[in-house]
Length: 119
Image (tube, rainbow, N blue to C red; front, side):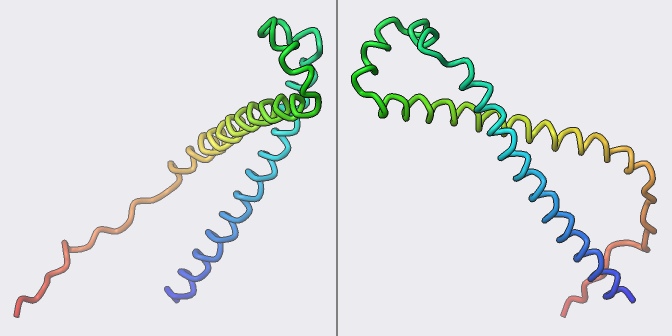
């Protein structure tokens, strides 16, 4: 009977872990896209010179390379924001499940630590 219960517990832990990883991964991809769109919408030809006045003259001759560098930085920032959102989600789930600890019972205490035979 104990082996069946242990197997079911292990199965439920594996499935729960897989579902949790899938949810967090999907949330990471989704929030990366949302944050990228938000950040990229505020980048225009008029906002680039506010960072550094000489930047526009420096990157203008490069063309697509400059756009790729800007896009890489926007993606890096969006990924960082998405990771923060994922950790916030995991924190909220943890706090939501925390009251379930009050429903747990203490285990039965046994006589003491097991005796080891010395030969």
